[in-house]
Image (cartoon, rainbow, N blue to C red):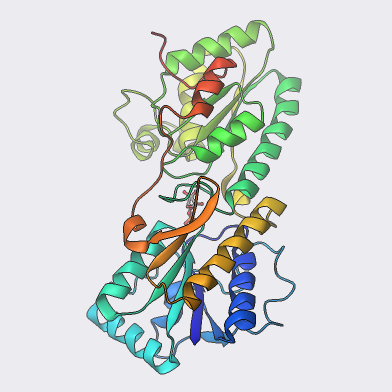
Length: 354
Ligand code: F6P
């Protein structure tokens, strides 16, 4: 069997561990020929496909390295026109690919599903994201590493917050889901955690910060990039456009600082963690999970179970149909035990007093 492997969408720690595990399993169990496709689906969209053989030696020594040896792209859309679809189809035929293992997020799964329907390209999916927001997958590799990075940042921020008696806002990634902000916030001892799933009440945050000004004299706020103020009609972009000093604004962390500062004696500062959360070597947990995902993807390939994505549900590795997860997102359920726990131990989630 001839198998292509690609990584699509934003990168995350653990991609190389999956590439290694898929390739080694396919070579040792199925004597397959494995080729790597450069830069996600983009590598199949040109007149000449951009590919390289993935041999045992090629994937040795990459388990612990962040990023992806194959490269990735966020913007490649093979479904955009009949011409690109025809090009992808002819490249897949010319390469003699029986199936492509597509390692990516919901966007990549949606493209894999679309290509199966449009040109009959068979795919097996492997979910990846630091956001941990892929449907049917309770833990995606990359998330643990991102939580560790954001947690360390919060701990570093705390010592300087303490010295200067400041309110420090730390903005995490996570798109429209708050998993990263919640887990890093809990692990990094944030006093206030603001999530996209719960619109925050400014007064609730002011109250906590003012109370802490009297006692602890510093406050740590962890805010997910998708969070927004309750009843606030302006989006982040509009807030930036209306600001008298737009240069200092740039995301929800900066918007919150602008809103909060007039109510407090302490100085407020914002740190946006950004892509540092996506880079670096995967944690041991992510190396193991990514290896398990890659191994399972190879078993799906070898048993001809195409059109499926690897999952982790109730601690068990399994799979679901790619069509089932394409373009869906998993957000925090408001009854999630971590939210209850956070409230119970006095972490403010930005909820209005009842
Ligand atoms: O989905 C992963 C992610 O890192 C999100 O957390 C973030 O919103 C987005 O990608 C950033 O994308 P880009 O690298 O294109 O700026």
